[in-house]
Length: 189
Image (cartoon, rainbow, N blue to C red; front, side, top):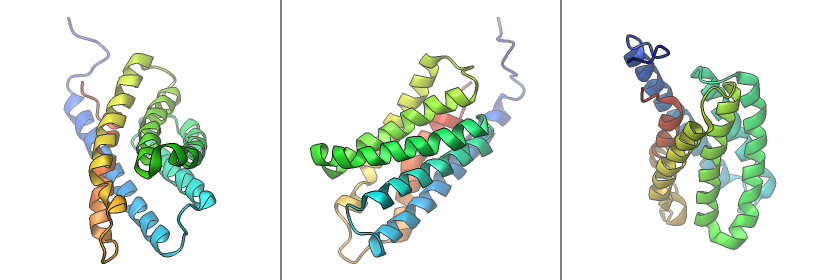
């Protein structure tokens, strides 16, 4: 018996569109985050809380715009909810840093970013998806992107003595964002 809610004639196009949106989103946030690295390197002192929280708000706002562009959620919920979540998660980095250290705090907040994004995306879609499915997607986004993030963390924890290679940062950031966007935007059906 087939599921009438799934249009099998459109499935390949929808999967391709989701893959394209995930790739473009990863590249867009890779570029934004590389620009952020440049700003932090040249203009923002380490440990500056206000710029750190502003950074979180901007990243989450761009994520909201990318998810809305992908047509995967109702825009106002994301444009309000994700920047607020970005401020809270970015602010949490600082007390987590005191307990877990730099990389530990980065990983926890990175994973939280994907879980919260999946939950807000579900809400923005009118809760049409089961909570279980949302948590699986968010968990896959957090796990995949968290592992990718851990793999590229050397760009901060073991920086080049010659200074940052921003092309490499862009590749690393895009690689780290890709699994999260794939989990949120590519429909496996």
